[in-house]
Image 1 (cartoon, helix red, strand yellow):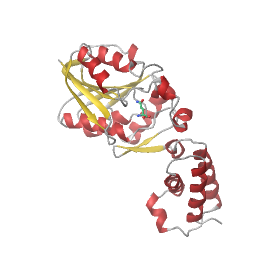
Image 2 (cartoon, helix red, strand yellow):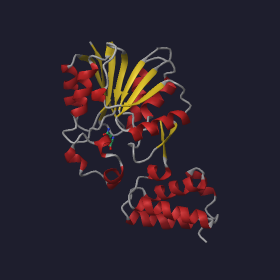
Image 3 (cartoon, protein in one colour):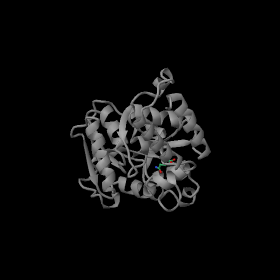
Length: 284
Ligand code: GLN
């Protein structure tokens, strides 16, 4: 019979051979998920034996991770902005950098404001749901062209007790009606920004498992910045703000796109690796 420590050591070794980064932490997180405890709790019970069922489940999960399936799809959840989100391979896994985008929006507005927000590319719903939690008077329309993504986003809203604050809609941004002239205070998007060329050099976890159309625009990475910025001019109120997450090396070009479309007071925020990661501006 395997103890917790034996199981972790064996699988860490296996995952490392399969080229998984941070193999031991992955092994521990997967076991913690199976045992329904925190990773650190494992350290208090290293000598505890695993049951046959636990061992079999663990073996199955480790095998999947060894095939480079992302940890978050295996455990089925991820933490983002202090909230829990379910994920599957229909949605991009929320990244820590995107928390900076959410934080920037929250810092620019107050809880009292009755904001109208449009989120383009809802995915798991992580951006909209975190905003709804921290800006209690906002109303959000959150769109995604993927029906399966909208399903995940709706589940996440329910799990996080969001009641009626977010309207998730299955629609492509290009078909989204401009509607009532200038209705939004905020438009936010973390669009697919990886160039087609960069895409082929990404890690196996991304290429083989995450939705391709959530990562790349199959072009130069700028397609969505152009279309969203142009259309936002007609959808934002005067002094409304447009917030984007951006990719490595894109800030200068995206600033230009925004300036050409009458956005001013443009600010760029760096991520933990000192890479320009968030850009936003105000409509003149
Ligand atoms: N941040 C993601 C990555 O680095 C990309 C997300 C996106 O294209 N919006 O993999």
